[in-house]
Amino acid sequence: MNKNSPNIVLVCKFNLGINNIDNQNKTGLYKESRNNSINKMLNYYSNEEKIAVGMLDYFTGKYKDKRINLVLENGRYATKYEFEKRKEEYKNYIDNSNLWKCVLSFNNDYIDSKISLRDLEKKVATEVMPRFLKYCGFKDIDKMTWSISLHCDTDNYHLHFAFMEKEANYVSKRGNISYRRKGKLSTDEKNFFKRQVALAIERESVYAPLLTKTNKDIDELKTFFNPNEKNFMLSNIKNIEIEEKIITLGKLLKQYRSLNNNKSKNVKYNSIKNNQLGKDIKILTNDIKKDLFQNKESTLYKQKETVLENIKKLNDYYNILNKENNIKEEIKSNKLIEQKQDYINNYILNSIVNYALNGNKKSLITLDNVIQEIALTKTKKLKNNSLSDIKKNVLLNYFNNSNKTKKYKYKYEMEKALKNINNEMDEAAEKFSELFNYDIENTRQ
Image (cartoon, rainbow, N blue to C red; front, top):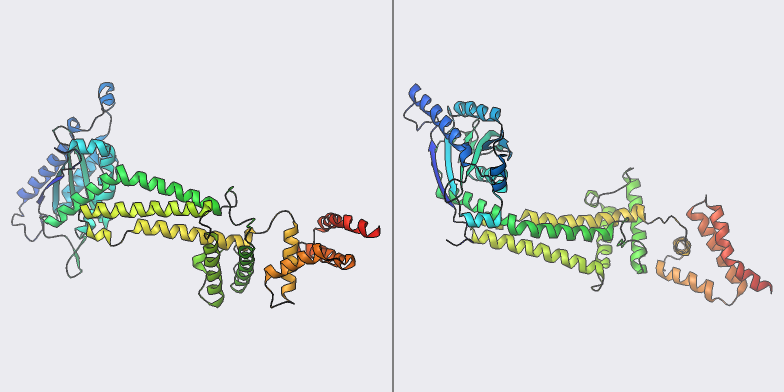
């Protein structure tokens, strides 16, 4: 047998509920036989001689603990109390619900090379069963009960599982809720279960590591937009055009927050209304994002490409695996991949928005801050000039002007701008003015 093949075989039987319309035997004797059948079934499932035991556990005797070899809906082993309680519950549920009993058999080599037996139990209990029951037409998973037991006492690992309705929970073709009348599982339903199990096993060995790597690379990409990280991109940007856009975005956001009486420190990109101001903010935010990733030689761009490549691999693997298992319904909408892409996009957009609103205030006043303040002030008078042009003119006029007297005019404008940034920083302004003492001493000579 090829160890790369799961060789999954599924066999199912059922007992009709006592009140099922198709049940022709509703006598007290039938009820008693059903109760006996439930006792035998759960006792057989929980037989400790059939439990999966590691070699070390076998020799140390640790496997002889209080756990029962019966896995509950939450993936845990049942305690003795839970086990006995489940017997009584099933005896009540059989009045109206069918009892479905199934055995799933595997290729041992395939399982051992892909997944641990304990993880297999958990995945079937917590992931496969809910999807399977939904596929079978049951509406509310909380109104279903199932029990699972993995046996390892034969040449092939095999998983026993049983399920019932706690109360009427089946959606009829007319949309009504009732107990499921039909006991036999269709070939399509059984194939769906087998495919889901195979998919869960494959995900554990291949898909999960790829997903882990993708998440790690996404975390690395996020550092470029985290002010506390060395990779932070939104501060000290050399491209003056991006800097201007961030400053303009900050002004728009403050205006937006004021108009909407929003006192919270942060603003979520997706919560911004689609009025004209909101649309302008979103357009500018996306424009900044686009500018940040323009340089294909930058580390930021390369990291983004790594993330996108990993997401593509996830998507390709997901679709190939589903295609091989004929799971057409999951190929149509791969929510996990879409969520990853949306998460990255929203994280970047939110980072840009909140940096523009709160994060571009530097703790130390620099020459750049002062020039920026002058430029912003002059835009009110020089409406036809861009911020970058005004900044350039400020510097040219100060450093290149041959008229010494006129040059000092810009010194005082800079001092005034400094005070405008923070009126309480007079001491800082005084220290800043000392930078120009050299020029003053030169003119006195």
